[in-house]
Length: 122
Image 1 (cartoon, rainbow, N blue to C red):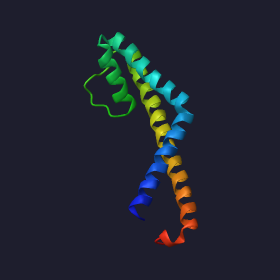
Image 2 (image 1 turned 180 degrees about the vertical axis):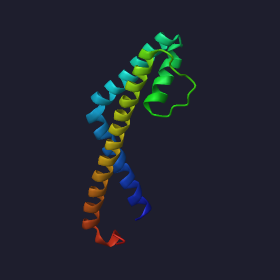
Image 3 (image 1 turned 90 degrees about the vertical axis):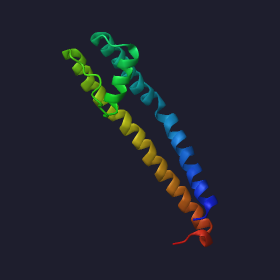
Image 4 (image 1 turned 180 degrees about the horizontal axis):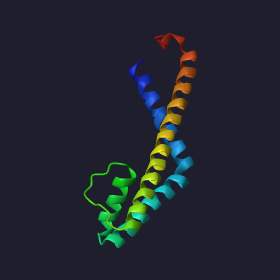
């Protein structure tokens, strides 16, 4: 694969990611808003600042879990569990976008190789 061909494949991948991201943006944005809202609610309940609550929500939702902030109240802990499930959905959505973009890019690349068999190293 030539350098220009690799650049074209990369460009096609990013185009596909952008296309599918626009398709799922309503879902993705709701998931983001849920994380932010839960973070703000937990911050209020636990007496944290809004920034600390949102930080906690994303660290929990993305299943990183540094342990810097730990909810003490039962309702905050239930919301933290909800954040974990929400974060898994958000991560899965993003992974699905990337996988679909790779599939589209590979298919387009193969069609291009069929038109230019001299450039296909296989």
